[in-house]
Structures are given as structure tokens and as C-alpha cells.
Image (cartoon, rainbow, N blue to C red):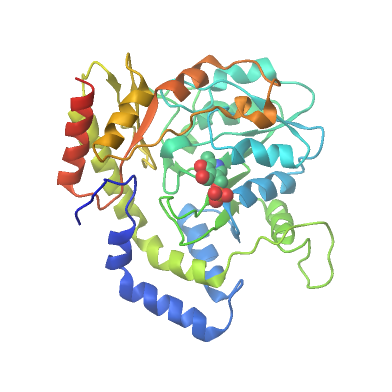
Length: 382
Ligand SMILES: Cc1ncc(COP(=O)(O)O)c(C=O)c1O
């Protein structure tokens, strides 16, 4: 495939590779006449629960719904405080605000871009009820320390795994200390806290061809409430027990996800190899800080920092030479207009918004396309 402009992500190769299977799966659903919560949804739930090693996987309409329903099923309500990271997509804080609870932010660790667990103590109040760590860009957050803190203070933990399908936790740092619980090692993100919220947005590592999401948990009561909430607060039709949502996954998306799911590990490994090539090409570059190639990281995004140059100018110059790039995220959640004036500044998060740049990456990215990205970026930074 030749590109006029190199995109951030190209889904065409996977569609072509899986075309026959996709076509068959879609035809099967169309002919079945069962479009919502059909057998494909149940099979997807069973397959993902078994892969992750959890008791329950609840398919939903989006990752945002998985966060909202996850929090509600944990009992979070108006007036509660939920601690999270400022450096994420707005759905992370939005789900807290939607319930009338208050997002409380702590700054990020500048290396991992994830919530810094050392800051948790300072924001704890009697209203604190939960923590939402985000495994940003596919890199697991410091779950050892986060879970230890949560257990000490009786807090719920909802992992935002929208960007981390297939990622495994390997310790809080490269030289894991006794502070990390070895029992957590090699566990999938989403399986360590009380529940994990996944997104099947098309660009995700496991993406549908429309919206979709999933809540996973091994807590029976939490799962039962979540199942009720996804279907207007009812388990038995027309016997609604609480005010819920319409958040069912449709059968077509489940059928598509079932075709793609067996490829996930190969695709995640391909992403890691692409990340390793980028890292090797940019090693020791005076103006690029590479992401650490930590075990368990599945590189939903390959994100560098641009140092001593205007990141926006570099992005513009890449654009002029036909290379897409993205800034995830240009404004931290606490400074979005919706929260104007409500929060202090979080310096590491602020700094990240000025420096981060995500480069093109998809599992089938041809070598020569990646080489072009590398050459052009080195050129504009010289
Ligand atoms: C970190 C994070 N959380 C939550 C979401 C929300 O997922 P969805 O778009 O499926 O609602 C996203 C989606 O981009 C995300 O990146």
C-alpha cells in the first residue's frame, strides 16, 4: 500500500486479511435476525473472561459506559471523591462527574505517564471512595502501590483499560521492590482492581467496527449490578429494579470482535517490534525521549517527548511532509473548559501536554513506511 500521507493507523490490512471470515460472521448475524445481545455477545464474553482469567465479562456499548457502569456498580454516588490521573481522555473524569461524584487528580509519573501512586496520600479525604488508574498508551500503571494504598483505605479500584487490551502488569518499576505484590505479576490489566473497563473503539488494540466496550470483574455482586445497569436496571424483562442505561453490545460488533480476537497477541507483539525499531532509531537523539520498552506494554500508542523544540512546530513540519502524528492529550483533564478554575496545576501532566507526540503505528505497518517516519522526523529535528 502506498500512501499520499502516512496515517496514524491503517485498518485496511487487517480487513483484507480477515475479509472472508468477517464476511461470513456478518452474514451469519444478518441471517440470524438477532442483532442485539445475540449468541455472539455471549461467546465473546465467555472467551474474554477465560482469556483474562476473570469470572465475568459484561459486554457494553462503549468504554465510557464501562467506566460509568463500573463505578455505579461499585456504589459510587453523588458527593463521593474518586482519585484519577489528569493526563487521560476526558471519559476517565467524565464518568466520575456524570455520577455527581468529584474527580480528584494526582499528578503523573513523568516516565510512565501514569498516575503517580506516591501522590495518593496527599489527596485522601473521608469522601474518597475509589481510584481510577489509567493504563495510558498500553503501559500498565503502578498497580502494586495503588492496590496497596486502596486496601489500606478501603477504596475501590476501577482500572481504565481502554488503551491496554492484552497488556500485563510486570511490577511497578524496572527493579521491582518488595512494595510490589509478586502475586500481581503477569496479570492482565483490568484483573487486579475490583473491575476493569475496556473500550472496543475501532482504533483500539482490539477494536470493533463501531462503538463497544466491556467491564470485567471477578466480583459476583458487582457483575450482577453491572448486568442490570446495562439493560435499564433489569435482569428480568419489564421488572426494572433500578434506573439504568441502554448499553448493550450489538451482535454484529461481537461477531467482528470474535474474528479479530485470535489475532490480538500477534498484533500486540508486532506493535512491540515496531516500538523497538523506533526506539533503536531514536536512541540518544538529543531532542527525543523514547518510551521505555517495558515488558507487558502493548503500545496502543508509540509516544515520544520532543525536547528543546516546539512540539507543535515539529508536528506541523511532519504534516507538511506527509506524516500524521497526534497529541494525546493537548489539554489535561483538569484544565478542560468543563472544569475551568476548579483545580491546581499538576506540573508533570502540564509538561507532558506540551511535549508528547504519538507517531504512526499499526501491527502491519510496512518497514519502509516506518523508515520514512524515522527519516522525516530526524530531518525536521536536525
Ligand atoms: C483512556 C480512555 N478511557 C476511556 C475511553 C472511552 O472509550 P470509548 O470511546 O469506547 O467510550 C477512551 C477512548 O478513547 C480512552 O482512551
